[in-house]
Image (cartoon, rainbow over all chains, first blue to last red; front, side, top):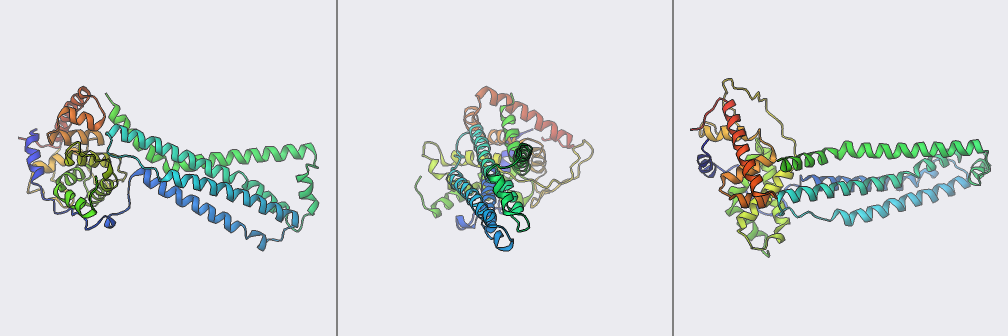
Length: 208
Length: 168
């Protein structure tokens, strides 16, 4: 194969298909994996905060006793605060850029590290925000008007039998494990492909 | 590097061929080529500060363009391609006139079978980069680059042969 021939043909190839834009704003949004993932994550966490804010209106539509309402708002406030704190942490983190003018191997390593780090921060944000959700659901359920107010009061003051206490603790732990598992699965399902692609390319560059 | 947006775009226009070749090497479909072409310009604009003027602008441009192509994530819709040694009908990539140059068409078709790193290697080799330059751009040793280039050339030759075409 004569690659010199190919070079001269490439040089004289018709390039009319590609045009330089009039200005940078005309360019489409980026397709680079790290930036795509970060854009999606930011939107997901913002959506989560909006959902939590909507949760504040639930007691308006559900009849709940006073203790339940108080607990509900305290828990929801804590959840929203945790998520907002993570979002703020992430927003500074999301602005970090990777220098694409380094050598290819270094660029791939940097992007892979940033991608893994971004996803870990995201998973922590989601898990920490979601771990109190089962308690919130429990308060909504036991705080319904049809139940005695003392039911929730007894649970809070631990005025319940050891069997119930163990049941609540084990139940909560199981739900927490499920939350962690689902978050990991969901993150890998949505973003694992980007990591795999970068890892594959890195393997190709490292192959002897 | 402190230049205005218009100066930057003019500079890109002068070296448009680099962007064209990289896009053409990495994607078969015209839409995908255009997306990569635009992405490269965007990444160059964003990382313009990293160009210190120690090397030619075109060398820096090559590096950013290839890195962008290597990490660019877009699933290409594949056309049916059997990759056999049976008689090959000229398969025309979008916007490309095969009658004009069979050799280039077969070359690009064969390049499709290479992985992202092999494409970067072969393009730099064709463009006349030295082993040292290629090694610096990819972050490999010169020895490794030489081995990889020889291997990639053989692979390319084999693919072209399997397409039922011989370069003269």
